[in-house]
Image (tube, rainbow, N blue to C red; front, side):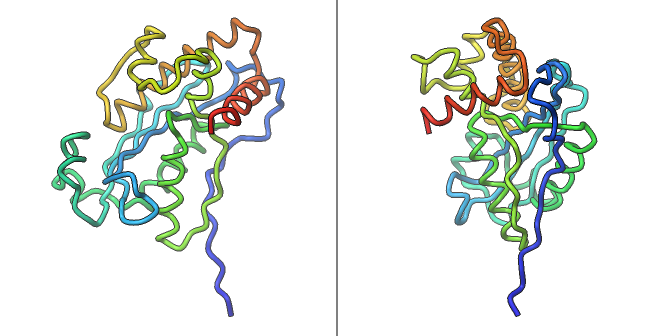
Length: 219
């Protein structure tokens, strides 16, 4: 008998009208750090952070951050990049428990959509970690801030997150830490939303349309 993989999904509030005002959509910004970029093979998650955006305001007091035990050593170059050391993750929960808690948080916050900068990396990392635990990951609704930024600044491709924050005049937090990048991304996202609203894109459906077009153009 063939044993089917268990399904793991985030319980997002996706069935909202496309006419819903962006102010009435709950978002959750997320970022992860890993032991490297080859997450489909040997690299593993070492940190996850998230912050909700409600009424287009960053809810910093509801931020979530945790280290993750990768069950392997952290390369020196990643230690230098992130500041995360082996002693930081030694007693941390494993990825499955972290993602389970993250799923609970998204449900508690009635989240409709995940937000991230280069979010495909984070989603791929989640998928790989859950696959190791025997789960089939159901890809959640997600929007990449790069799609918004490329709509707003079509000639400014390839910039770093911090560069975009400087362009938009938003708050900047510690780079290459999951919590720092999550907060920086959240403020960039809120400002980018304000700017697309000024161009007449004021609904959930407008956001999906704008980011879908830019994703097809750049990926």
